Amino acid sequence: MLTIEILPMEKVGALKPMLMELADHHNQVAVNFQGLYPLLNIDEKIQILQQGIGAGNTVAAILSDGSNWQGFCVFSHTGGCGSID
Image 1 (cartoon, helix red, strand yellow):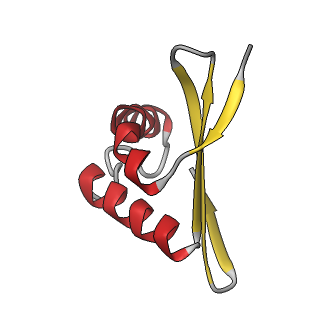
Image 2 (cartoon, rainbow, N blue to C red):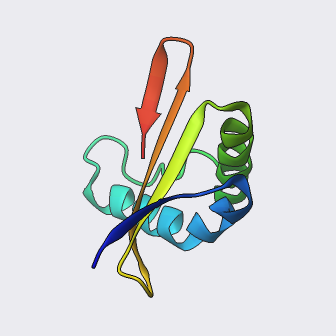
């Protein structure tokens, strides 16, 4: 059974392997931006996500099969602009 779990700030660092995999994917498929990912160092990205969660501007969720994380989604917003990873 798959479940969705909202990650607290303290667990966001565990997304590092998935964020690296996402950056690798973008670098392989991006036509105009190949090789530019990640735009931020992954550790910096994690810090920004943690700060966003602490401020209430970011939600990070993982999809789990009960024993392993299968995917993630991060929604961040500042003012009228938002982003989804």
